[in-house]
Image (cartoon, rainbow, N blue to C red):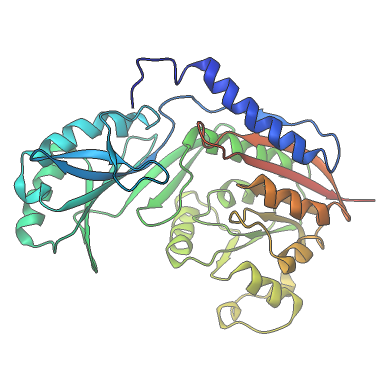
Length: 366
């Protein structure tokens, strides 16, 4: 990727964002005319994680990517959308790998996970078993570059120090700490993530009371940690074991003690709240002790399934973060039968792509 032309200019950034916003406005207009609060990304150096194919050519390893529909990757020498720690580390890391045959041989890909608080985790993925000699060389590289390194091969995961980084995000003047595990989901754009957290917090702060929050798809507690201050208690659900463990760690890191997190899917918590079936994972959780007023959902691209959609409609307030405007509009077509849209926001989480993250806050109709 080359920054010598105006590909990543402010003008082009605004054009690509306007195109996405116009599509979203057109889709949203099916439901009414709403003002959209827009949060722009930094055009460059915004991605905090990245994955590169490693292409071996002329006796050297190179960073490479695949264009859609093409099998052969193309070599890259820069990554302007990468966060500062990624762009700073790419060259010295690859140079060190190329100078060490043990580290470069059969290296297949490299993954970066970085933070705004200054930590870098690099995963080296191989098409070969990793032995003690590899570990010795990798430990020296880790010390030389002051990073964390993980080695992966088939059925192998070699953690030299730790398999996570700890991010620090300031939201409305308060610093939050988040453990972000190598194999777990994290928001790729830290700047926009902070904006999303502030917006969601404002939505809930307007109605702060002594009621409780139900959160579905809580991940590592990214939103939970910020929203918990506005509620008496929070019940958060997540299906990933890795994310549940990180969420519990993050609540401890931030001194949050009013959250109960359980490993359940949205379909399962719907069944539990409907009384359809008991769950062993809820044996220590008294569901009838919660006084829910608000539900927060951040579903995958497919959006809410029919059961979760019906469950959400039972709450006084619905906070919906979406990574797919099309599935969002489909869900809103049903939810707006019982609720009115109070706030709409757009977050450019993925600049230079067609993806647009959006937020909707709904309140039960009188």
